[in-house]
Length: 427
Image (cartoon, rainbow, N blue to C red; front, side, top):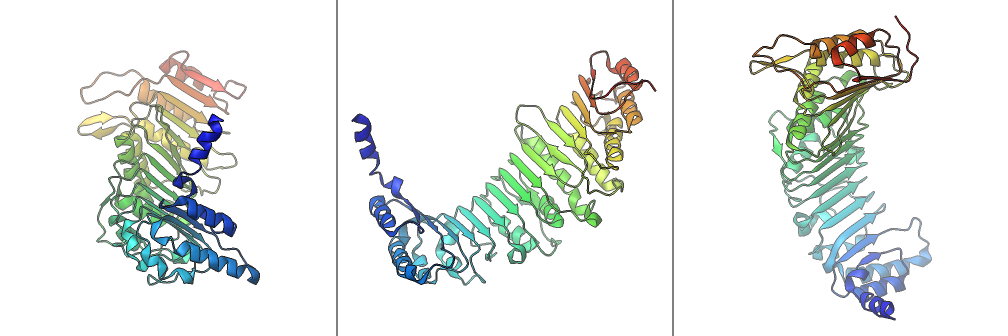
């Protein structure tokens, strides 16, 4: 009886009835609107494809019911193929709306529907998919979450998006997916600082757009960066725009102890985890061409490796990629060379403690041995030389290392080198 009485008391709480779907039975919608009283409503408007003519009166009555409460809508989600024209004037009364989610609605200009109303500056959440949205940077200045997806030719230019972001200083989450930004970044574009941005995701977004945004965004408090499946044409695989990725990664890694980073490009996956141990994974794509990294990109990678405080490095080669080995060897070369930093010779990844090489057929044994010898062999102490942290674990899989193991164990010590997944033979 106690449970029943408490449930009866809870069931009349207005907030429990404040979520309304237009595809519900009309009686259910009426009941929800009645019991929600003055609570702010979350409205999901779901058009029914090819709705029979017999249902039109019901839909019109539903619209009329919703229009009487439009002044207290908190969020509105619309997915359809045409705008609900009967709501045009009523939407001028959206005084409390803070979240707007539009998908596949037939809007064509900033004069349409939602964007002529004054509520735009009060929006905290704005999601647009498959439809036009105005990119007047002054309209959505209060945004905390911006989601743009499936826009194709309806999306903004690079400059428009940059202006839009510059006018949204409070952004916390920025998600871009299947976005074909057109145009190039203007020379006058300056650095945009988004102090509140914690999550930046770019998926299936054009290569130059990723590079341009990385070039101008300053996101010192970012705790999650995801760059996944962004198509990079062969001709732009190593373009200058991609080089802007490295400074952004450096900045994020330096300023955040718990940053979660995923980068899935044509040649690298860079990741980290949140248990105080950094991981950098570098692998090759089966679609890559055998061209070497040009100096600019090697320098970017070298700067990244030299800057990161991570302690664990995994180099992996995907199967059926005949060019992966040379790229992994290139990374080993970078780790073999100290750099002059303010008059002191410093090693890339100076805190590296665990190195793992996962591959099918690695032909870069000599480069690995040279890296071990150059980096960890005893040498005369010098005032201008900063030694790296001693390697605690070297994990090798999938290839015949032969007598190279003796050389590496002689430098690193017994128990440091661990080998998996092959039958050892001498060479």
